[in-house]
Length: 296
Image (cartoon, rainbow, N blue to C red; front, side, top):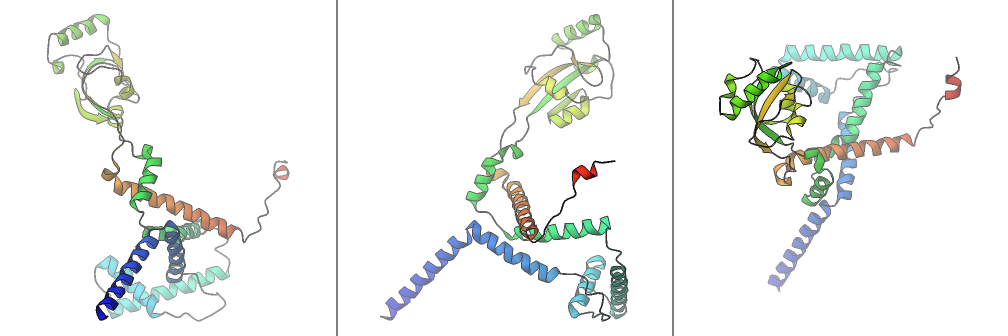
């Protein structure tokens, strides 16, 4: 009977573990945990100035520890007793001046302060998303909907002969005939600081080298033959495409980390907007009459 009792307990434990695994994979559970985390973050990181009406400035153990941690992060060592007193004195000075500034209303209509407070609220509303880990199914579905964001552009390798800004037909034909006979391209054309060749390069590299739009003009050239004169931002070129590599959508496994980062960013935006809409419901917004504003 003891054996069967033990087996029963093991079965219950296994069932409970299975249930926990299934539940923790549910997106709704993730958002519930994220919501709880936001309240915890507010509680731990709340640095709202105290009521300016009080004259008590209490430097708590937590505040002192934070000051010491900030010091150690910069100087790679703990502060000594004299330095700790200086840190506390500086905190007290800051606290006194901040309270006096608040009492005078210096924070009102200050764009810098308002933007900083907005940034902190947006951070607090979305920071907890970092604790959420998407399942493979969730990540796969997100990737399927956003593949274009991870598209790897094509590239090509080329050799070019610069003809100058306004080449004449005779010299161009002579260079083309020399190339057909196998003459070294590096010995032909007008001397320039532009490279005579590029290894496999993406659009940005080619356009940065020869001018915007040059990469697009190369796509129509067949591999292995010299082109007709092509215009770039600097003049005209004869171009030989050595190799083309088409663009492609990579497998999820090769870009999983990047996809997960973008998924987290998207979830942070969703959570931030949801938080804002919830808070917005508490306010009555009165907008100005635009017809009145338009009057001179």
